[in-house]
Image 1 (cartoon, helix red, strand yellow):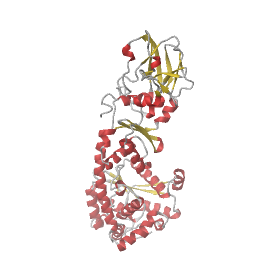
Image 2 (spheres, one colour):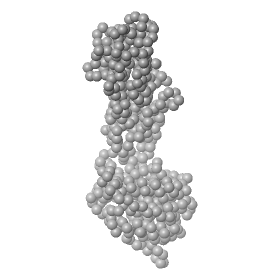
Image 3 (cartoon, helix red, strand yellow):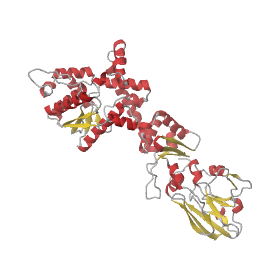
Image 4 (cartoon, one colour):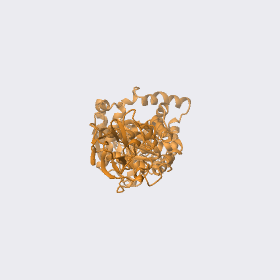
Length: 524
């Protein structure tokens, strides 16, 4: 512990509101807070207090400003359970300095090693997660507007160097944010640790030191102790402030690109109104391909990241390779393909649509099973399950118009009824899903074609081809439900069998998406 007494018998834990007003760092602090609007419309602030010089100085500066601005000040210390007696000392010191200055204090504790082991996290990452969860829970429970952390210009410099060494995008090189969307602010990001310690000495305020900061087993400590001193000595004595300014400039550029990406994403995202018979699968994000394909890579990548986040994909697991593959999926010539994303998610290209969702292929495969194969013996309703739905079979009069081919699955009315010639030997018919090597005589063809090629020609996306029922008579395909009757089974007399397939659930949702009659599927 470092006890710096300002004289006159005053406790080194007691803040002097009159003396602090003339501190050079306090004037810069007020200007920084004002420039970035860190305390605009803020009525309460929770300080993350470790007991070290950075957080103690932050607490003191906010204490001084609160006397002028009138916001409520709180402090919280999180005990990580890692440094034994030294950690106990830090917690006690943090509590005492708050008591001395009548600042409401909260103490939390967690087992960092257990979290690290259970989740495969490094010790520092596990400690950070527990600490921030504790702070956010406190702020929410006590209706505190902002959480202030003691990150400095030196922290910013270290962070930029680490990210640059490991490789990072513009977003990564923007470094530590002055303000985060979750209410966390960094009001002393402009100052170096040296300046903060000088302020504490001037004020006669005590602080503690963390011995783990001197260990070289962590990357950040090695950058702090080995790399930055070399740069400071031989290249730039003001490297911390220089990199801190660089990060601020990059943040402004990043914010501008994010604004453009947000506009592009909102234009491209397809939203259907419920009540029109069109209900989107849970968390599914649907994008208009052509509205995004021409965007610059810097905008497109950010828009896709927004879509992934809205779909529920854990963005911390997304790396640049995932974004590149999604860009290829969106811009590529293959109109019917998909790409598996982390955590069980899927990106699917369906012609002029890009879907991002949980892996619904597993759901389809589990719900679209026909084992044993249902049999049609005459007019009836055949239940195919919760996803494949029902096949309605009825006898009807023959009409040449009914027999006509009427387009592909993007046409209105899909899945449309098909009509088989109701001959005496037609029954029974089996209902099954397609199998490898299936061939089929489409209406009007004198040669068989591969069922796969037929479905491609009718614009059935790759992900749905395995879930379109086919009708089979003696191992010969008599019809493809919703699309086409086989030529040998066409209506030849006066009797016809009308077969209408009505999918349900997710399968129906996907077909509705493809139809999307509100805008031309192929031109929008």
